[in-house]
Image (cartoon, rainbow, N blue to C red; front, side, top):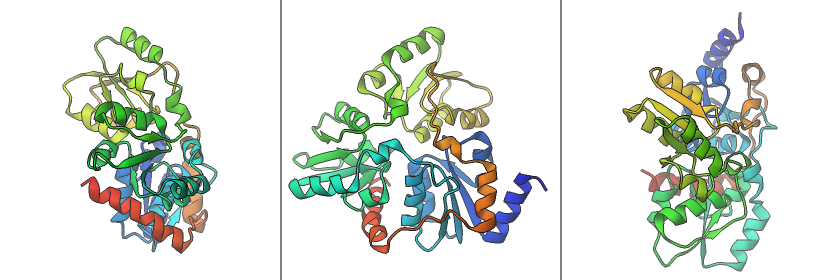
Length: 301
Protein backbone atom coordinates (compact mmCIF):
# COMPACT_ATOMS: atom_id res chain seq x y z
CA UNK A 1 0.00 0.00 0.00
CA UNK A 2 1.47 3.38 -0.95
CA UNK A 3 1.30 6.33 1.41
CA UNK A 4 -1.62 8.05 -0.33
CA UNK A 5 -3.70 4.88 -0.13
CA UNK A 6 -2.76 4.52 3.54
CA UNK A 7 -3.79 8.11 4.33
CA UNK A 8 -7.12 7.69 2.55
CA UNK A 9 -7.76 4.42 4.43
CA UNK A 10 -6.85 5.98 7.78
CA UNK A 11 -9.09 8.98 7.10
CA UNK A 12 -12.09 6.69 6.83
CA UNK A 13 -11.14 4.65 9.88
CA UNK A 14 -10.57 7.75 12.03
CA UNK A 15 -13.50 9.81 10.69
CA UNK A 16 -10.92 12.43 9.85
CA UNK A 17 -10.67 15.42 7.55
CA UNK A 18 -7.46 16.98 6.29
CA UNK A 19 -7.27 20.75 5.95
CA UNK A 20 -4.30 22.35 4.20
CA UNK A 21 -3.19 25.94 3.83
CA UNK A 22 -2.45 27.24 0.35
CA UNK A 23 1.27 27.50 1.19
CA UNK A 24 1.83 23.82 2.00
CA UNK A 25 3.59 21.36 -0.31
CA UNK A 26 1.70 20.46 -3.52
CA UNK A 27 1.24 16.82 -2.50
CA UNK A 28 -0.20 17.92 0.86
CA UNK A 29 -2.70 20.21 -0.86
CA UNK A 30 -3.65 17.37 -3.20
CA UNK A 31 -4.40 14.90 -0.38
CA UNK A 32 -6.42 17.45 1.61
CA UNK A 33 -10.20 17.45 1.81
CA UNK A 34 -10.11 21.24 2.08
CA UNK A 35 -7.52 23.79 1.01
CA UNK A 36 -7.69 27.48 1.73
CA UNK A 37 -6.37 30.59 3.40
CA UNK A 38 -6.71 31.33 7.11
CA UNK A 39 -10.27 32.64 6.81
CA UNK A 40 -11.46 29.71 4.72
CA UNK A 41 -9.90 27.16 7.07
CA UNK A 42 -11.38 28.93 10.11
CA UNK A 43 -14.86 28.79 8.58
CA UNK A 44 -14.46 25.12 7.73
CA UNK A 45 -13.20 24.28 11.23
CA UNK A 46 -16.13 26.16 12.79
CA UNK A 47 -18.62 24.00 10.90
CA UNK A 48 -16.73 20.72 11.02
CA UNK A 49 -18.30 17.64 12.64
CA UNK A 50 -15.44 15.22 11.98
CA UNK A 51 -13.99 13.36 14.95
CA UNK A 52 -10.44 14.16 13.84
CA UNK A 53 -9.05 17.25 12.10
CA UNK A 54 -5.56 17.09 10.61
CA UNK A 55 -4.47 20.70 10.20
CA UNK A 56 -1.69 21.15 7.66
CA UNK A 57 -0.32 24.61 8.28
CA UNK A 58 1.62 26.38 10.99
CA UNK A 59 0.92 26.05 14.70
CA UNK A 60 -1.46 28.98 15.16
CA UNK A 61 -3.74 27.54 12.46
CA UNK A 62 -3.96 24.23 14.30
CA UNK A 63 -4.74 26.12 17.51
CA UNK A 64 -7.49 28.05 15.73
CA UNK A 65 -9.03 24.80 14.53
CA UNK A 66 -9.04 23.49 18.12
CA UNK A 67 -10.60 26.72 19.40
CA UNK A 68 -13.40 26.53 16.84
CA UNK A 69 -13.92 22.77 17.08
CA UNK A 70 -12.99 21.94 20.69
CA UNK A 71 -14.70 18.55 20.74
CA UNK A 72 -12.61 17.31 17.83
CA UNK A 73 -9.18 15.73 18.09
CA UNK A 74 -6.98 18.23 16.25
CA UNK A 75 -3.67 16.89 14.96
CA UNK A 76 -0.78 19.07 13.80
CA UNK A 77 1.61 16.88 11.78
CA UNK A 78 4.60 19.20 12.34
CA UNK A 79 4.33 20.68 15.85
CA UNK A 80 7.68 22.40 15.31
CA UNK A 81 6.13 24.38 12.44
CA UNK A 82 5.64 27.83 13.92
CA UNK A 83 5.08 31.35 12.66
CA UNK A 84 7.71 34.02 13.40
CA UNK A 85 5.07 36.74 13.08
CA UNK A 86 2.85 35.09 15.70
CA UNK A 87 5.80 35.01 18.09
CA UNK A 88 6.20 38.79 17.73
CA UNK A 89 3.02 39.42 19.73
CA UNK A 90 3.63 37.74 23.07
CA UNK A 91 0.46 37.28 25.11
CA UNK A 92 1.99 38.84 28.22
CA UNK A 93 3.02 41.95 26.28
CA UNK A 94 -0.45 42.24 24.74
CA UNK A 95 -2.07 41.88 28.16
CA UNK A 96 0.21 44.59 29.55
CA UNK A 97 -0.70 46.91 26.67
CA UNK A 98 -4.41 46.34 27.32
CA UNK A 99 -4.04 47.16 31.01
CA UNK A 100 -2.24 50.41 30.18
CA UNK A 101 -4.65 51.35 27.37
CA UNK A 102 -8.15 50.27 28.45
CA UNK A 103 -9.84 52.56 25.91
CA UNK A 104 -8.07 50.96 22.93
CA UNK A 105 -9.67 48.17 20.88
CA UNK A 106 -7.25 45.35 20.15
CA UNK A 107 -7.53 43.77 16.71
CA UNK A 108 -5.36 40.70 16.25
CA UNK A 109 -4.46 39.24 12.90
CA UNK A 110 -5.30 35.54 13.01
CA UNK A 111 -1.55 34.92 12.74
CA UNK A 112 -1.26 34.94 16.52
CA UNK A 113 -1.09 32.31 19.24
CA UNK A 114 -4.18 31.11 21.09
CA UNK A 115 -2.88 32.79 24.24
CA UNK A 116 -2.61 36.13 22.43
CA UNK A 117 -6.08 35.77 20.89
CA UNK A 118 -7.45 35.34 24.40
CA UNK A 119 -6.26 38.88 25.22
CA UNK A 120 -7.83 40.76 22.27
CA UNK A 121 -11.25 42.01 21.16
CA UNK A 122 -11.53 40.97 17.50
CA UNK A 123 -9.51 38.80 15.14
CA UNK A 124 -9.15 39.28 11.41
CA UNK A 125 -7.46 37.72 8.40
CA UNK A 126 -5.89 39.36 5.38
CA UNK A 127 -9.09 38.52 3.52
CA UNK A 128 -11.49 40.30 5.87
CA UNK A 129 -9.34 42.86 7.73
CA UNK A 130 -10.50 45.82 5.64
CA UNK A 131 -14.16 44.97 6.12
CA UNK A 132 -13.75 44.55 9.88
CA UNK A 133 -11.73 47.72 10.44
CA UNK A 134 -14.06 49.75 8.20
CA UNK A 135 -17.02 48.73 10.37
CA UNK A 136 -15.51 50.23 13.54
CA UNK A 137 -16.64 53.63 14.89
CA UNK A 138 -14.37 56.39 13.58
CA UNK A 139 -13.54 57.67 17.05
CA UNK A 140 -12.54 54.24 18.37
CA UNK A 141 -8.85 53.94 19.27
CA UNK A 142 -7.37 50.83 17.71
CA UNK A 143 -4.17 48.83 18.10
CA UNK A 144 -3.57 46.45 15.20
CA UNK A 145 -1.29 43.49 15.88
CA UNK A 146 1.08 41.93 15.12
CA UNK A 147 1.58 42.77 11.41
CA UNK A 148 2.55 46.41 10.93
CA UNK A 149 2.59 45.94 7.15
CA UNK A 150 -0.99 44.68 6.94
CA UNK A 151 -2.01 47.42 9.37
CA UNK A 152 -0.19 50.03 7.32
CA UNK A 153 -1.97 48.89 4.18
CA UNK A 154 -5.30 49.20 6.00
CA UNK A 155 -4.45 52.76 7.06
CA UNK A 156 -3.56 53.56 3.44
CA UNK A 157 -6.76 52.08 1.99
CA UNK A 158 -9.21 53.24 4.67
CA UNK A 159 -7.61 56.53 5.72
CA UNK A 160 -8.15 55.95 9.43
CA UNK A 161 -5.45 56.05 12.11
CA UNK A 162 -4.46 52.95 14.07
CA UNK A 163 -1.64 51.99 16.36
CA UNK A 164 0.61 49.36 14.81
CA UNK A 165 2.41 46.60 16.69
CA UNK A 166 6.05 46.03 15.80
CA UNK A 167 5.72 42.78 13.86
CA UNK A 168 5.79 41.35 10.35
CA UNK A 169 5.96 38.23 8.22
CA UNK A 170 9.67 37.85 7.40
CA UNK A 171 8.84 36.23 4.06
CA UNK A 172 6.60 39.03 2.81
CA UNK A 173 8.58 41.77 4.51
CA UNK A 174 11.65 41.04 2.39
CA UNK A 175 9.77 41.63 -0.87
CA UNK A 176 10.96 44.99 -2.22
CA UNK A 177 9.70 47.54 -4.75
CA UNK A 178 12.58 46.47 -7.00
CA UNK A 179 11.21 42.91 -6.99
CA UNK A 180 7.91 44.26 -8.35
CA UNK A 181 9.61 46.49 -10.93
CA UNK A 182 11.76 43.60 -12.16
CA UNK A 183 8.70 41.34 -12.43
CA UNK A 184 6.83 43.96 -14.46
CA UNK A 185 9.82 44.38 -16.79
CA UNK A 186 10.10 40.61 -17.28
CA UNK A 187 6.35 40.05 -17.72
CA UNK A 188 4.81 43.28 -19.03
CA UNK A 189 1.46 41.68 -19.89
CA UNK A 190 0.99 40.08 -16.47
CA UNK A 191 -1.35 41.20 -13.71
CA UNK A 192 0.75 41.84 -10.59
CA UNK A 193 -0.70 40.53 -7.30
CA UNK A 194 0.92 40.82 -3.88
CA UNK A 195 -0.10 39.89 -0.36
CA UNK A 196 -1.09 42.72 2.02
CA UNK A 197 1.57 41.44 4.44
CA UNK A 198 4.00 43.20 2.08
CA UNK A 199 5.21 46.72 2.82
CA UNK A 200 3.03 49.66 1.77
CA UNK A 201 5.60 50.75 -0.83
CA UNK A 202 5.34 47.27 -2.39
CA UNK A 203 1.54 47.05 -2.46
CA UNK A 204 1.43 50.56 -3.97
CA UNK A 205 3.23 49.23 -7.06
CA UNK A 206 1.01 46.17 -7.53
CA UNK A 207 -2.27 45.91 -9.40
CA UNK A 208 -3.87 44.09 -6.47
CA UNK A 209 -3.04 43.40 -2.81
CA UNK A 210 -5.02 40.31 -1.83
CA UNK A 211 -5.14 37.33 0.51
CA UNK A 212 -4.38 34.00 -1.12
CA UNK A 213 -8.11 33.32 -1.28
CA UNK A 214 -8.60 36.68 -2.95
CA UNK A 215 -5.84 35.93 -5.43
CA UNK A 216 -7.46 32.63 -6.41
CA UNK A 217 -10.81 34.33 -7.00
CA UNK A 218 -9.21 37.07 -9.07
CA UNK A 219 -7.31 34.61 -11.25
CA UNK A 220 -10.32 32.40 -11.93
CA UNK A 221 -12.52 35.36 -12.82
CA UNK A 222 -10.00 37.32 -14.89
CA UNK A 223 -9.62 37.31 -18.65
CA UNK A 224 -5.88 37.90 -18.19
CA UNK A 225 -3.61 34.99 -19.06
CA UNK A 226 -0.48 35.90 -17.07
CA UNK A 227 0.02 36.74 -13.40
CA UNK A 228 2.93 37.76 -11.21
CA UNK A 229 2.40 36.19 -7.79
CA UNK A 230 3.87 38.21 -4.91
CA UNK A 231 3.39 35.80 -2.05
CA UNK A 232 4.64 32.43 -0.81
CA UNK A 233 5.15 30.19 -3.84
CA UNK A 234 2.97 27.33 -2.56
CA UNK A 235 -0.15 29.06 -3.86
CA UNK A 236 1.04 28.69 -7.45
CA UNK A 237 0.36 24.94 -7.37
CA UNK A 238 -3.34 25.52 -6.76
CA UNK A 239 -3.47 28.37 -9.26
CA UNK A 240 -2.05 26.13 -12.00
CA UNK A 241 -4.33 23.26 -11.02
CA UNK A 242 -7.46 25.42 -11.19
CA UNK A 243 -6.36 27.49 -14.21
CA UNK A 244 -4.28 25.25 -16.51
CA UNK A 245 -4.58 27.69 -19.40
CA UNK A 246 -2.88 30.55 -17.51
CA UNK A 247 0.74 31.34 -16.60
CA UNK A 248 2.06 32.28 -13.17
CA UNK A 249 5.38 33.85 -12.30
CA UNK A 250 6.87 33.94 -8.79
CA UNK A 251 9.03 36.85 -7.72
CA UNK A 252 12.76 36.46 -8.26
CA UNK A 253 13.49 36.52 -4.52
CA UNK A 254 11.66 33.17 -4.25
CA UNK A 255 9.41 33.70 -1.21
CA UNK A 256 9.30 30.36 0.63
CA UNK A 257 7.98 29.66 4.14
CA UNK A 258 10.07 26.76 5.40
CA UNK A 259 7.65 26.17 8.28
CA UNK A 260 4.78 25.52 5.89
CA UNK A 261 6.92 23.02 4.01
CA UNK A 262 7.66 20.94 7.12
CA UNK A 263 4.37 19.06 6.77
CA UNK A 264 4.76 15.98 4.58
CA UNK A 265 2.64 13.01 3.57
CA UNK A 266 4.74 10.80 5.85
CA UNK A 267 3.94 13.03 8.84
CA UNK A 268 0.23 13.11 7.98
CA UNK A 269 0.14 9.30 7.84
CA UNK A 270 2.03 9.04 11.13
CA UNK A 271 -0.39 11.26 13.09
CA UNK A 272 -3.39 9.46 11.63
CA UNK A 273 -1.93 6.10 12.61
CA UNK A 274 -1.22 7.07 16.21
CA UNK A 275 -3.51 10.07 16.74
CA UNK A 276 -0.34 11.81 17.86
CA UNK A 277 0.74 15.46 17.84
CA UNK A 278 -2.58 16.52 19.35
CA UNK A 279 -3.28 20.19 19.90
CA UNK A 280 -4.16 20.65 23.56
CA UNK A 281 -5.36 24.00 24.89
CA UNK A 282 -6.56 25.07 28.31
CA UNK A 283 -10.36 25.32 28.43
CA UNK A 284 -10.17 28.90 29.67
CA UNK A 285 -7.91 29.90 26.77
CA UNK A 286 -10.30 28.24 24.31
CA UNK A 287 -13.27 30.10 25.76
CA UNK A 288 -11.51 33.48 25.75
CA UNK A 289 -9.87 33.06 22.33
CA UNK A 290 -13.08 31.85 20.73
CA UNK A 291 -14.87 35.15 21.31
CA UNK A 292 -12.69 37.35 19.06
CA UNK A 293 -12.64 34.67 16.36
CA UNK A 294 -16.43 34.30 16.41
CA UNK A 295 -16.71 38.09 16.29
CA UNK A 296 -14.50 38.01 13.18
CA UNK A 297 -16.64 35.36 11.51
CA UNK A 298 -19.80 37.31 12.36
CA UNK A 299 -18.45 40.58 10.95
CA UNK A 300 -17.05 38.98 7.80
CA UNK A 301 -20.29 37.37 6.63
